[in-house]
Amino acid sequence: MGTITFLLVLSFLVFFHELGHFLAARYFGVKVHVFSIGFGKQLFSKDWMGTTWQFALIPLGGYVKMKGQDDSKPSLIEDGDDSYNTKKPWQRIVILFAGPFANFILAAILYFAIAMMGATTYAPQIGNVQENSPAFHAGLQKNDEIIKINDTEIKSWDEIGKIIVSSDSSLKFFIKRDGKLIAKTINPYVSDSQNMFNEKIKKRMIGISPSGKIVNLDLSFGESIVYAYEKTIFASGMIFQGVQKLIQGVIPSSEVGGVITIGKVISDASESSIIALFAITALISVNLGVLNLLPIPALDGGHIMFNLYEMITRRKPSDQVFMFLTIMGWVILGGLMLLGIYNDINRILLNN
Image (cartoon, rainbow, N blue to C red; front, top):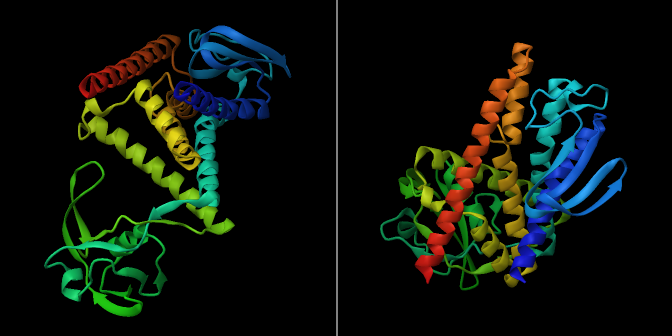
């Protein structure tokens, strides 16, 4: 069942990505010959609206084949107003960007659905108070519930951290203890901490940690839209930073996961709850959007770079350069895929 769920989720994500390309191409009048989910041998196809819609044997991706666009034949020229290569560079960029953008939109839709179904988060309840910290000296205690900070009502633990980090002076905490409301003034201090990539950073803190209690967020329609937007932006930023840290060597290459890891994560989420499945699907969708925008020639980001070059220099890259960079792009992608599978196998062996 887990494998079926993985294939369905992956096909769904690929469909949305390629649909972005398809709709943008059709908007600019470009003919789309093939809309494929998967690569390789054709398993099923149907001709509709001048396009062949198909499922192929290898379900690890997909593509739309447009008139006048073929990576294996960079010198291909097909005339006509319905040809990709006769469109202006900015129009081609829109077509290329539309795929990753569709992944971001899908993630936002999924996060919105999560918000409407009942998003959960850590309750603003204190679990531990660090000795000799500002919170300790102010008299905060375990199980205190933080109701308000200054004039801002608090619904989740994340909101507390955001206010503390962005503060530049003392803060007035309103806490609930034994049914009574108590006010405490606390001046955050800058202390050593670690970010999500285990890098040492300086951060404003007061010395408290959450109790671990989970609460449901009761969000209105408007608040759900804000929630979806913030979650999509946060996930995008996290993945962009993750790629950057991987290139810098901050994240070891052994942390790169492959298709087996993705499949396991999706399978585990599907067995947990529909909300968990939506959350991991949204995160993978953002991941696909971000990775496809990387300036690697075989990806959308690489093709966008080629078109930006044409816009600036008023000429296209030579066929030899285009072909060489595209091949190098596929080598890089192939290497990353093999690395991910190698790491997946290592994890399986270590856990057995």
